[in-house]
Image (cartoon, rainbow, N blue to C red):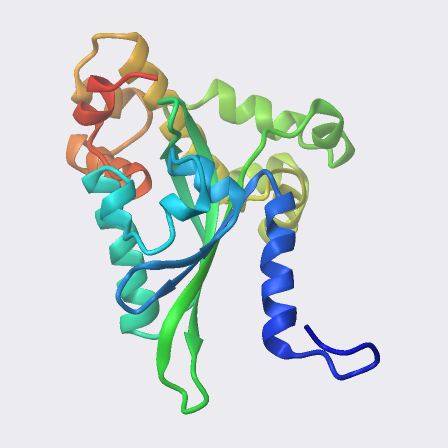
Length: 243
């Protein structure tokens, strides 16, 4: 601790900030070293991992806490961030929670550098995309957009077509969608298709190929590739472990 009136120590400030993240129930935070071990996490992350305390998480790797396919996806992201020194912004992910339910998250990851500029770890935040209320949708006049997407999930309109419905430009529609849903228009369209596909996989016995066609994907291979990218498991694996 620093003396009253003295200059705030940067390390103290950083750890105080981390402690504040425990108050964010819908935001998962973690910091990792280059060996992939968790160095800091918040309470939401502990819950997401299905553990009971931070002591059960710190020092572990993704493979110790999450299913193999999901851990592999996290490690691929980490390699991009730490191995290639990249920053990830607004990575849309469909994550299976410990109770087997699923939820949409936006993830950002950023490399940590030492004084010499070398990458020594990363920090990551994943924000739970809670469904906005009807009032928020109405305030931005997005009711017709929502209705159109729901009605045409098997052959969704393009971003340009939706912008025309909203009587604005595509960038303007993106700003309005981000304000209400936290997503770009394109991300919202993809989310709608995957949500419908996940529902069909869990509630019907239709083949994966039929589900792909019914939700507007070019073919089963394209659907499976997108599903694995977002969820970390194939449609067949997802169906085998219903929420």
